[in-house]
Amino acid sequence: MKIISRLFIALAFVSSTFVNVAPAAAMKSRIKDIASLQAGRDNQLIGYGLIVGLQGTGDGFRSSPFTEQSMRAMLQNLGISTQGGNAKNTAAVMVTANLPPFASPGSRIDVNVSSLGDATSLRGGTLIMTSLSGADGQIYAVAQGSIVVSGFTAQGQASSVTEGVTTAGRVPGGAIIERELPSRFKDSVNLVLQLRNPDFSTAVRIADVVNGYARSRFGGPVADAKDAQEVIVQKPREADLTRLMADIENLQVETDTPAKVVVNERTGTIVIGADVRVSPVAVSYGTLTVQVTETPQIIQPEPFSRGVTAVQPQTDIAAQKTGGKVALLDGPDLKTLVAGLNNIGVKPDGIIAILQGIKSAGALQAELVLQ
Image 1 (spheres, one colour):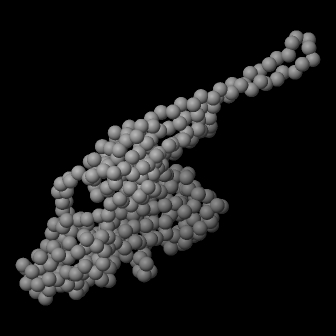
Image 2: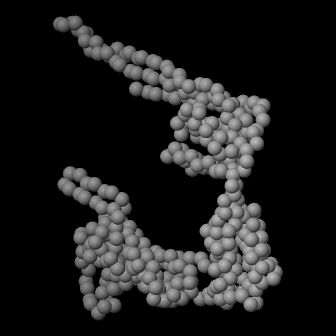
Image 3: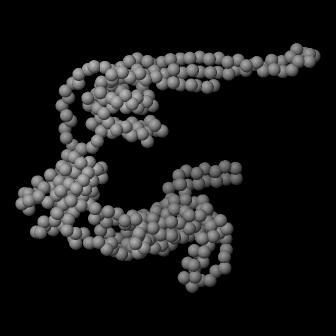
């Protein structure tokens, strides 16, 4: 059976008058929720380690010779001499972690481990002491501990079942920080706020709100919006930088974002922003389905004849057309736009096609992001 579908979308601009709709109440957010401190960024750490204690699911030394070399080097450092072997209870892994800002020696962080060789599962293993280095080559943490693996594998002689990933895991609180970052927060002469969603309007509003606070507290402005992402706050002489940041991050700011429609065609997910607008447009949606069914018939020759068996083809074709009504789509606000799309009575994949057609016609006043 073959099913061929075609989607017809006819778009035509029609004259209409927008209804005046009161703007939605402005939403305000704390600065700490929409911006981060440049000096408070994370730093990535990486290391190479070994996992032991696996139940025959580790690396094979023939296909992963680096695992054997690492195990020999480790045992030699412990004063044990070894001459090879083929134990499957050891696996070589890469260990990664994020060093949080202002982390002090002695505190713990989580680490992730990922198999490097042909190990089939890290479940039940233990990560032995692994040093974690930064981009400058310095060691900032040391990791060790039991691996937590969310996936599992069950295998028999004829079949196997695998759920999740068994060659990657996590060690909660498995790394101890041994070295501080070289930079000092209180040695800075200013604060640099980085917007998580760059926007000129939001950056200017942050600077205005911070300056309003600074005028009442220090007698003058201290903030300046450098661009759409950065706002620089100069440190007043009499201010303590930690207390200044604590006061600034709790200030309320009205945020602004560009109008976007995010479409994921694989999952059928549609996300429409609050500021999305649609110019008056007429939409006709209909689906034509052509069903082709093949039912071949077998023809047998007469008894005692010299004929041969033959196949006689037989094809049935049926066409069905649904929908096709024309609807006026006019979205001066998000509520009206969603109601108009729902009134057309189509599924998410049809709405995705309609939004793409409206964007092509120039009636969608927003950025269409396809994932």
